[in-house]
Image (tube, one colour):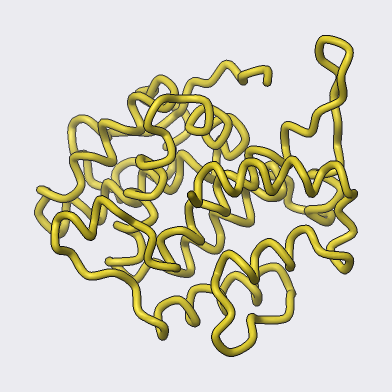
Length: 225
């Protein structure tokens, strides 16, 4: 898969500048290079004081919303990108920033477009080396799979550290927020986040083509496993 040349634009991640000071010009500031810089910022979250952690999550979230395709693609391609994504999602869930996660997923699924259906984005294909592939579907699936993995309690790093995993109520709240943001039917009782997301984003009602759905599932399972 062709990799997007990414320069993530996030202010103050290394210096801990307060969010209020950087929001207006967040996209023009100190750059973070690809998934490695994102990884370093995510891994430092656990030891941060609460206020600094909130500022850092604001900035990381802005990086996703401003560069959803590039960041998701770069994380999927990088060594350890799956665990970095899941660590970020875990931090967002722990801090009850579920609405922000739904908004970030929306940005990734729509490739930052503010209008149109996500199926129109995921169905875009490109040719490389004589074959057809669906880059937007794959990277969107990867990001969605990382969220589903945490909501379904598959965050191994958190289990090893003894931290609590999301409960049923948290999973339900998060998936209902996603459903509301995408104007979808929410999951039924006892349905896992993964089961619901795969059906909602690739099922017959989604209007996602069969090959695009296959690429979405490929990315999804890579992050979810």
